[in-house]
Image 1 (cartoon, rainbow, N blue to C red):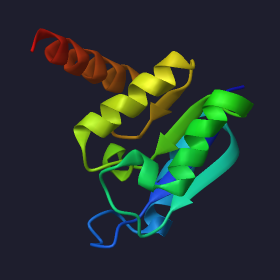
Image 2 (image 1 turned 45 degrees about the horizontal axis):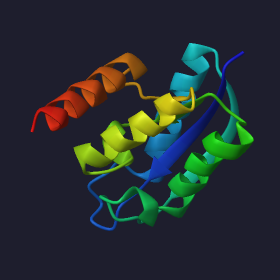
Image 3 (image 1 turned 30 degrees about the vertical axis):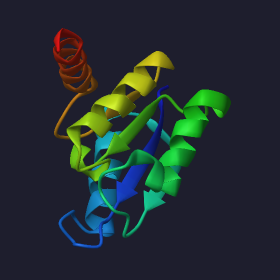
Length: 126
């Protein structure tokens, strides 16, 4: 069985869905996929861009590096991770290196991985 964690972030500007809505979305997705939920991470009222300014996300990253408690991190929307595409690509790359993945009801791991690879190729050509 695939072990899953979820990540929720709300922002000070209230541009992201409310916490309760995000939790309902990720729990529904986890159930639909048949995953076992084993962890949750929440950064409430966290600014949007930098990954390492989000303590719960930092904890999730450390988990994939050290404890390996879960296989997939589910988010309601990818923009709940960061407002910055470069930061999202960085996180997808990091997860791919450790054999973990990120999924959301709106974007699959394959879509995220493909976008990250396209981004890295474009940066290499510069």
